Length: 285
Length: 285
Image (cartoon, rainbow over all chains, first blue to last red; front, top):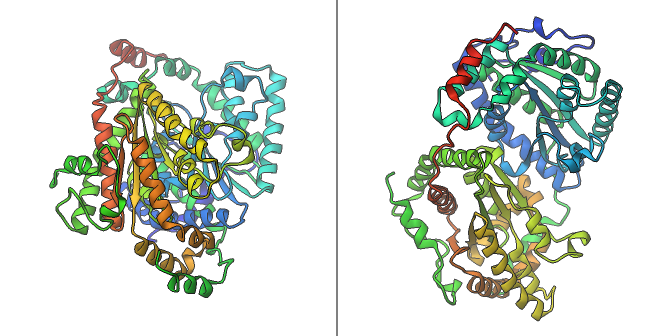
């Protein structure tokens, strides 16, 4: 590996305490000393190793292991949650991944606690679960749009921490990422969608209404991140104006988290030589 | 495209009437005039087009369209259902795919009709659903192992046809494939798993017990295919001893099915110029 990517992982991890998103550059490439072409090459180089680590996790899950991985992606519209998934999760076997895109809750979901639908979407053992939006919407848009009373929002931070701690105790590694773009970059991306007939379907006039609440969203993110940035479920803020850096960062986080499981291949729970003989000595079928 | 792949698709489609699997070569490459390297190149060449067609289907689903695709993969153990998925479905955006691997039904699933759990796993509009095993197990292993009385098995063929016809009428394109390997090739693949420490987790001694029922399974497949090979949900038998051919065949079937939707990009349901002005004229955030 041409670059020490593990440095990148630690750089992106949010330090405990209050956070000022305005002080974090959105078009930087912290922890990576290279240009776009280097970043793309580094991600491509990471691919085969990532695929093998994912297969080891899958094999572990099939063999009695209880571990899995949960990647939570949050970010303003156009921050690139979808593109990130294609570029990073797309490097591993699709059978080992479960992606859930959370939309506004249905009436049925609303009839339960906010964590009910999230719990149902958790990945089984051995899998990589990806949340495109998540329970954090219940303290982000819910706060900005007053979709719940302040005391309920307040309750949710603690509920999230308790829920995530339980999840981690059960064997899930949780990686929470905010894809951090500037308001200017969002404007450019929305305009680019409008300029391209093949992207009109991605554009929703409501996104511009949300955009007008940009400062309120940034504040809601700062509060949510500070209140739920725990040791077992830490937040990462990913400068995301540069798509190549965003992809490399998420790919590296996934890689490092899988590597930290330190999994070998499961050993046989049967007699290998006996099985060979059974096959070699079998009667004609 | 160097080879006329659409010829491949029509070649693989099973003709109406009785089928004799023994007469279909497992190591052939019907409809494709090339070697392994040509086949791999043809699949790689297919990739970008496949990804774009998948995105068009996804966009259609987000814009009121009701179409989707269901790929049903059946085959004996080691026939390569998993490897096929990695090589073909892995070429498109993982967010546009929903893969379900069916195992032995749980007590909860058993308390319902056999199509209940299958129905729950259907892809939403705009998505490609993949079944790794399926409701066909309920007329395959169920028949071979007498897991249901003969009259119930008999009932299921008609139930499957009615269910699939309804699905097709709702807008789902159904592609059913049997990955067809020889008993000899299965033996080689099982032995290869035993010879490779990193593959022991994929080996299950029970697979050899199933193998002893090979002729009964082939007969069950012949009956199931002949009984459920309908115009709206046709069967394809894919010679699968050659992995490169198997992958190219499934990739081509997916490609042709997506292309047959003949989808453009959804047009804007908002005033594009008005939206541009809103963004360009906005007050500072």
